Length: 470
Image 1 (cartoon, one colour):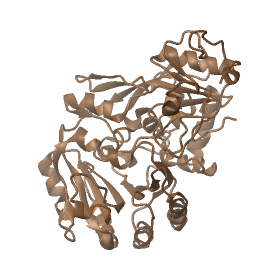
Image 2 (cartoon, one colour):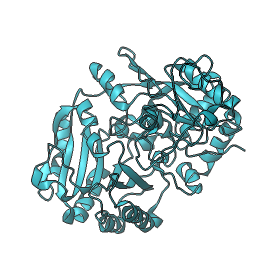
Image 3 (tube, helix red, strand yellow):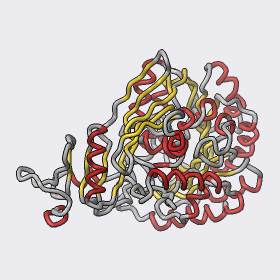
Image 4 (cartoon, one colour):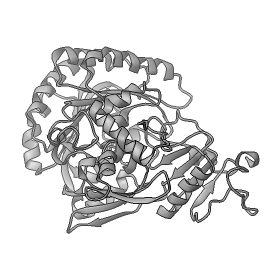
């Protein structure tokens, strides 16, 4: 390690670690005991070795780390929650600007605003905002990072009622490729603010987000309904008709795979192939019960766990099914309304994985998502009905990887002519570069290129789903 970092700054004689001027956080290199745990990200299939990890404790640290990296011609990766399947939060032989210690959340309940640091997780946000019965659209797993999910768009249980996460973003503080601190909003650097609402981590390091909040909970009607896999085709056809006219308060996610061994699921159902419809009703519980009654009565579900529960608890219900350190490989696309021939493709492929942990997740969009005009933010494909992600999952040491990676590719190919773009946060690490353009559409992508060329002409921030400057 001495020879590796001798050229990136002087080393402290006491610790032997490279130093960065004005940096008050912690610098971690390969000769330190916790280097391997610190460089690990959520996807255990990612194994990259950065030259230095700069664990920041404030915005000044981020500025210092970016300037240091630029001054020494180092690759830069940005880590918020480290949850992206592509593993872009860590790089080989460069510097990781690590915000994971910056998890502060401040709530103004009177004005329904929250200020969130760039390393916070969605569980941090929900914990603080739900103290006031408030929330904004976040992910469906509480250990997802706020920064990555937001900058890519932000799908979650509340999006049909309250819009995507980016639709609730008011302003950000951002460190540019030149190490300068900017505030971006509708009034300040509006071109940059537009690009940040869906354009990913291409434009800088966001150290703080300001969100608009809404009255949600603290108790909501939510939970999954489980049917046997053999009924998936019929249930999907009913579900298609059911959600077509469902109120925007109802958010649903369909999961195809085996029933996870959660305490709330009877042991005799564990690992049994299931179609599961998860739901969350962002409105009065009695209205939610009336809305969900037809779905809950269809085809005698094997298990119905819908009921009143704390919103923050429901937000973390899936955490143990997507564990840090497991191996993940995804393929994804947006889909139109579920025609019969599309349903046949989904039902015909969804249960063919080898690993009991692999699954398919399908998010119902529309509602407030589609009411925002295309191009108003950088998030693309707003008129799609569903986003589907085909997720191969296997634990370290298991031999399912090749088989289930092949399964996702076969399934994805079978969806070919139904595809309508893709959610950029669901893109993996081995995608065709054209898929980034597919996530936005030509006009939005070209405008993103213009903003990228203005704020990062050297493509310093390219460890992401990259938008190349001119």
